[in-house]
Length: 119
Length: 158
Image 1 (cartoon, one colour):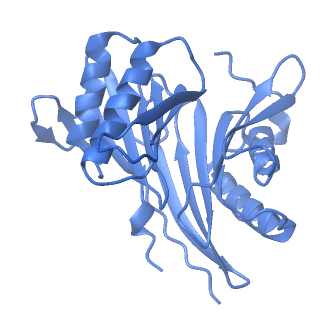
Image 2 (image 1 turned 30 degrees about the horizontal axis):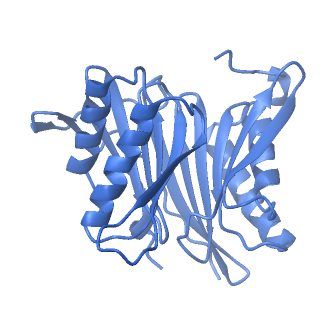
């Protein structure tokens, strides 16, 4: 049985400070880690909700870490929408270990992840 | 059935900056900013275990896949001061099933680092859990992530 299907991909990005992206696709989840601080930081969960309307809705929540940073939730929300628009309905576990939570940083993170996506 | 082992160490896959230029550079392993990713598969008693270990500077992420590539339940475990107690929390997958929480706890005891463990071993399978844990611990020791007994309580100060 080949295990290459779930080998994590490591990408180094320069976002003002050294940033590592690790992206891995499991059968039932996408796992994305963004780290600048040597640990996973805050972990978020995002999924597309079952619904009948043409416009999908998404549920984003923090499952570990800072719960008072709206920019982190916004980043997860942007990613899950991108995943959904790319045709996958797998939920996302996103970990953001960032030195700052400014708009520019999160925008940079989101575009770096979309650029290196596995979906 | 012989066990197959595939080990991949990713020092750097690709270095990019946002303007889209690509360059590859070698980064030493095991240093402050060297992330090590190890993946391997073990076949034990007709069960196939897949393992992934991602070593960050101050944390370890591990995934144990039992016959499938599902993420499974996610647990966070960390050493807790003042004594060497370890706290474990289930952060994804519900708490009625504790499969994996004891593995997470023991990884913290062995390594002294914060641990995030994802594990999809079916519940009520203590033998599978024990087999998976044994293989994982062997690999952690082989990779040098475990601390020796003489080091005592090496708690990270962050």
